[in-house]
Amino acid sequence: MKMIRAVVRPNKEEDVLRSLDKAGFFSLTKMHVFGRGKQKGIQVGPILYDELPKLMLMLVVDDKDVAKVVSIIENSARTGNIGDGKIFVTQVLETYTIRTGEQKL
Image (tube, rainbow, N blue to C red; front, side, top):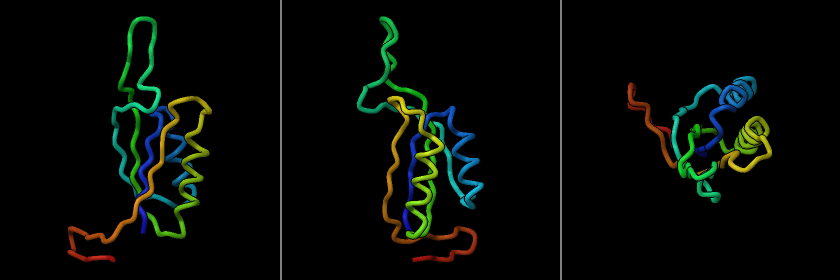
């Protein structure tokens, strides 16, 4: 299993969620976050906004689905401009269901 963390523009939330849902990926966690990338924020006149609002999505998927999910997120979140976001993929070693105590390796 892999965990996919995607940091995207908040205005792309509906597009990304709709695309994931349409492809059958229903379970996810989303958080509204603030951050900055290589551009270190955005300068508007004399004001520097060094932390910008973003949306972080977290999904755990089977290894075979990683490329599909990454492609869905990239295609539905892309505007072609700086600040479109990042996708991180990490290994999930085990999961536990709190209600039942079930462990999945």
